[in-house]
Image (cartoon, rainbow, N blue to C red; front, side, top):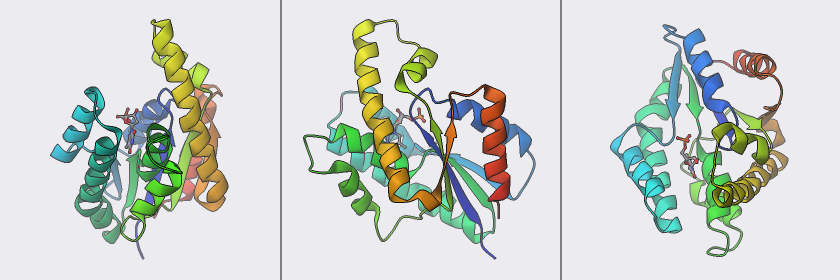
Length: 201
Ligand code: TMP
C-alpha cells in the first residue's frame, strides 16, 4: 500500500482557500490526512513570498518556487506518501506550469512546457488534481481590486494562467477533475469532497 497525493489548483480568487479550510475542518484529528501548501511555511517558502512581494526577476522567482518545491518534496510529500497518508496540497507544481508559464512569456520559448520539463525526473506527480475553474472577472471581483488599471492587468494575467491550467487538463485529462467554481459554494464543496473521498489512500 502507498499513500496518495491530491493537489488543489486554480487562479487567485477561485475559492480554493475557502474549500481547503472546510476540508481541514472535516478531516481534523484524522492522522491519515496531511494538509500542506506551496509556497510552504518553511524558510524557502518565505523566500518565495518575498520574491512575490518585491519586484523580482521572473526567472529568479521561478527558481525560488522550484527550490521550495524540492524542499517540500523531501520534508512533507515523500514522507507522507511513504507513511500511507493522503497528502492534500493547496497549490503544487501545476501552479508553476500555469503561473510561470504566463510570467515567462517573452523570456523563454514555450514557457509552460519548459517549466514542466524542469520538473521531470525528480518531482512527484499527483494522483489527482482538482482544478477550481472560474472566469478571471468573477475571481477578481471576489478578491476585490478598486484600482481599474490594476484590475484590468490582473484579469488579463489571470486569463493567461487559466488558459494554461486548461491546457494542462487537455494534456493529462486522467489526472484532473475540473470543478466549476462559479457554482454556489455548497455545490463546489460537494464536488470537491466527493473527489477527495473517492481518491484517498
Ligand atoms: P497563494 O495565494 O496560494 O499563497 O499563492 C501565492 C501566489 O503565488 C499566487 O498568486 C500563485 C503564485 N504561485 C506561482 O506563481 N507559482 C507557484 O509555483 C506557486 C506555488 C504559486
